[in-house]
Amino acid sequence: MLQVIYSDEFLDHKTGIYHPEKPARLTAIVDALKSGNFVEKITWKLPTPVLLKPLLMSWIENVHSTTYINKVKDIAVSGGGYLDRDTPVSPRSYDVALLAVSAWLDGIDIILNTDDSAFILARPPGHHAVSDTGMGFCLFSNAAIAALYALQQPTVKRVAILDWDVHHGNGTEAIVETHPEIAYISLHQYPAYPGTGDASQQGLHNNVLNLPIDPGSDITVYQSLWEGRIIPFLTNFQPDLLIISAGYDANTNDPLAGINLQPKDFGLFTEYCLSITKKIMFGLEGGYDLPSLAESVVATIQACIGESG
Image 1 (cartoon, rainbow, N blue to C red):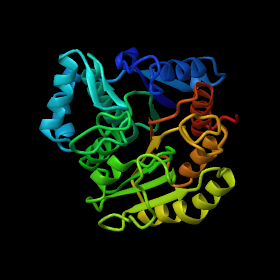
Image 2: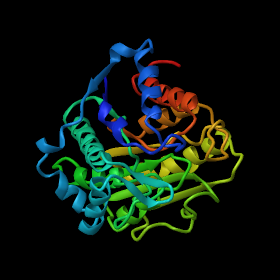
Image 3: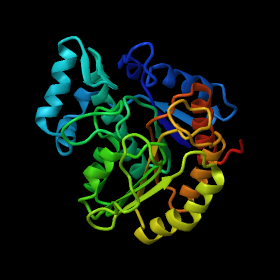
Image 4: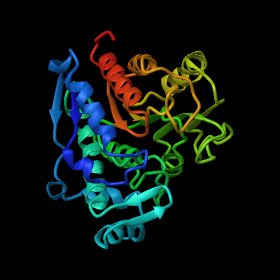
């Protein structure tokens, strides 16, 4: 069984009619999942309300400065604004971003306390957010917060974050590279936004594996990297839990990148992950062509629950 954590409140982070990171991303995915022939193998779950997670702010403050957290809150309370030209904050964005973090932490609890997998269908995304500011559509660093939360659970000694978003997760890497118990692996187009992720960047504990990919690359390039680099790296690291920063903007139809993957390829990525561990949590990052995005999430979930595409 797979649990999908979703709330319509995630649609309340308003970014503007022309912004690629828009609420329709989630509704496209929800519609695709609810019309699939595997619907009986999915359990839908609401995220834990922020008020019922009294330690939530402490986990966010473990990653982000109080000054930055208050900045996001103040912009929202004042009616909205921008962290940078790409990263809007609407009146409800602060509350929604807190709920997104809560959902990612719920996912960790599901993985550790059940035999289920979890897919966090939330926004805003997080992998570009650094400790003292958001950027690149991202407000809080969901994956990094979730990884540090997981490490405080008694059965977890090592956590791996695999980021297959087409853009390098500069925020996630900057936050977790100081923790030897966390490995970070990124497959990303290079050069591309945000300009980080060179292969020479290996983390402070050799716990970072950056795999830059040339524009125009297809699944054959990815398969070589999975089999030759990623699986050996993760096998050696032996994570107790695998967090996927699941971005789907490496699709050939995506408007913000130039990689030539197909939606079905993300099913193959999921099968590779399952060869490492069954304890996997997926959290949505990018992906801006709505049909490709929805099809890719479906392919991910089908592979996770053992359904053929």
